[in-house]
Image 1 (spheres, rainbow over the protein chains, first blue to last red):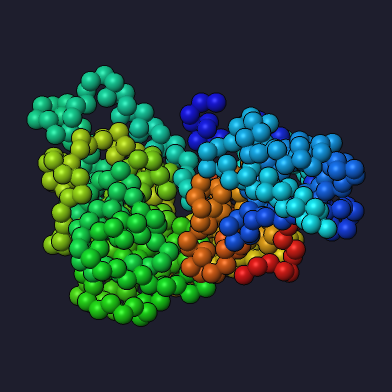
Image 2 (image 1 turned 180 degrees about the vertical axis):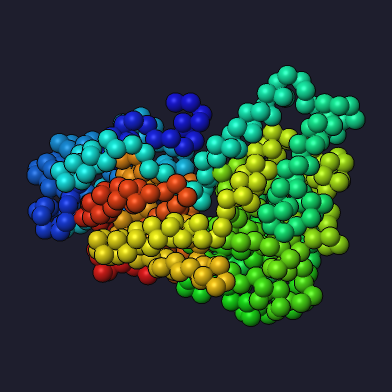
Length: 132
Length: 406
């Protein structure tokens, strides 16, 4: 990625995940029966997201999410939801910002925090599940 | 695609070409400006034009182009040519003015452009910041600072379009120098520096169909001045740096066009489209609100408006501004947002924070800015997709409508 792209422009993959996000939860969260959920961020900072997980035998069998945030927040949550499906909880927790960013073909520099947010939401959901 | 309704609306809209509703950011070159600039460019290319400071004939020709443009710009705002300093634009002019009063007491409004706010913070001795009401009108009396040397309030706000009471400011601070950043008001409101009673006022060419990269700072004869950029005799020793006859010619042509064709009334049709967009948003999009004045009203008698006729700022609860902006862009519609994300910043619009105190309203805001070329079709195009975009973003949002955090 060139310097000018790195500073501002979204990759085609980010745009694709933004315009056609995967696994989002539309409307009421009751629409997706889940075993746990985790929320991070704050609307005051402009980004907030929740991950909802269906878990069976310590494996994430299905996932949905909700986001209030910018294009890269939506795209990185969408990317994360694709990455965690079918993985064990421990494996899923290994997915960090670097892997999400790489999956999306890079994010503009000032947007890295958005992908960190997705990872933290997942960690919060797993933590809540294990605390049960 | 996000949802079937939205997908269909986006696809349909994308086929219909581009809609530009970001005139407040920059406006397309007027054809007469382009023609004038091409002519000057040709003369530059053939070597007929020299450095405007040089004594030879090519230099003299460049000098003439520059001075002709200066006279055109001066005429448009009721100034004398020698009261006009060409600058690179609004940011340089704002920096120049706050720098004149370095170390002294300055009062500014909370909703000034960042170039004014930041430079005033860095250079003033004491700084007073005037708060604004919920519509963005400055509260002139709310400062404890007495005897400021400089009071700086913009003529109209770039995000909301709210017009500030400069004449009243003049009366309230009789012994201060008054500066007004008229970048957004330029070309939309009648501006006369003598009637306003200002000592300094700045404008930018690219807001009225001229080229970006050139603006002007009006300095009243006799007002305190010292240059911000030093080391050259250009602009009567008031701004160092080789003059730019190409940009100046474009600026002058835009000013001439405005002089010949412009009237406050011309923008009544723009105001009507702006008002139509405002009412349709409120009627057709749930949980939307207008920031600033809901309706723009033309005062025939005084040939003025209650708010700029071309700017509309709206917020959409639970839907984030950058996402709305990029969904609109995907359908060929260009607007801007007060969301922090879009500006590459950590804080949302300081203007909306000053008027609403609500970060979510600021993050969820969209500014539509219209031009004389905007049509009812453009407004229809926006309303063809905006309701589904907002509804979709609201439905995947973590914020539950009605429970928004304050």
